Amino acid sequence: MRVDLGNALETTPGLTTETLDRLDDRVAAAHERIAGGMADDEFGYAALTLPETADPDAIDAAVDGFDRPEAVLTVGIGGSALGAATLSNALSSDVDAYVLDNVDPDDTRALLADLPLSETVVNVVSKSGTTAETLANFLVVREAMSDAGVDWTDRTLVTTGEGGNLRQLADRHDLPSLPVPDGVPGRFSALSTVGLAVAALQGHDVEAVLAGGRDGMDALAGSLYESPAYAYGAATYALAERGALTNAVMPYAESLETFAEWFAQLWAESLGKDGLGQTPARALGATDQHSQLQLYRAGPPDKLVTLVRPTERADVSIPETDLDGLAYLGGSSLGGLLDAEFEATEASLAAAGVPNVRVEVDRVDERSLGELLYGMEAACVLYGELASVSTFTQPAVEWGKKAARGLLGGGDFAEAEAVEQKRELRID
Ligand SMILES: O=P(O)(O)OC[C@H]1O[C@](O)(CO)[C@@H](O)[C@@H]1O
Image (cartoon, rainbow, N blue to C red; front, side):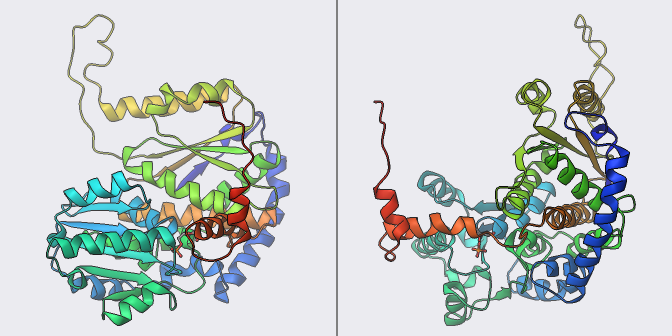
């Protein structure tokens, strides 16, 4: 992973090399804290040792019990779905991957109608083992399998923590299961059983993903000038401090669109604390040049844009044409056009004084994805250290969970009563 901060200097909001130099002393101290947390396997920091602690053999052993499926359905939500989905949607496989990470009846019904349930492995993932959406979806999927005459116990892999309903289910039915690593919050678990089991089921090279993570781990250093991940974390932190409260992440590759969704949870749930944080906006290049770029370039000076691309990609030639004014396209290629648009958008933002950061990986393959996922996790941890927030917890999400549970009769929660007292101003 390579980071170029050039277009974040002298912009509005913007950085200077003096700012970065001053910040680098704090980066060094933060790195010491992070390295210490990694060495002591501390809660949260343990995520940054996954390239060494993850056990690909255990993952292979768990998935080897299944005949090669036609499809894999991940039933999970948040970090229990997005890491696996990022890898599945970035890499091609003849094993189709689907995700149920919402409780939309129309979507769930349509998906189950299409799935070859007898040839599908259901990968149900929940660190806590109690998440309502995941357990509800699993109960629906299990009934659909039974209705289809499929023995769900033959087609289900469980990845969960030591306690909770899912662990009880796995134990009761002797299901193949994988542990969720201790001390790793869900949004940081892509390089663990949580994100890698599906990759293994799809035949991807899990060792290569972890090797990419190790590349990212090896690149951590006590200076932002020596560590791309820390450069990104420090620059985004400093820009947020100067008013860039939105970070629009805009990969120029369809295969990285889900990566932006994964990044959004990582950034929002880790850094949105105590009135601080930086809102991740999900965008896609070149498509959003025809959608959100107007706001990024000419809207409030309150954002930065993170432009992500692979520097190598398979290409498609554009045929020659005699259409007036389009001859310049003929003989070029779609990849060439996409790269020209990337660089043009980057320069367009800089010309308007909008800070933007370039993040490049060699190509969209297992190793580069592992490095990119690891790099953004390390960047997030560094940002959290600099911002002095509790990077690895997410207390703000609990209120809504209690309210929903109370509304469904799952307990007496004051939050549910608050829902009943909604202030109304209805316009029909
Ligand atoms: O893996 P679990 O415990 O089902 O949690 C799923 C997701 O829900 C959250 O706990 C937030 O509610 C996320 O942090 C997590 O990734």
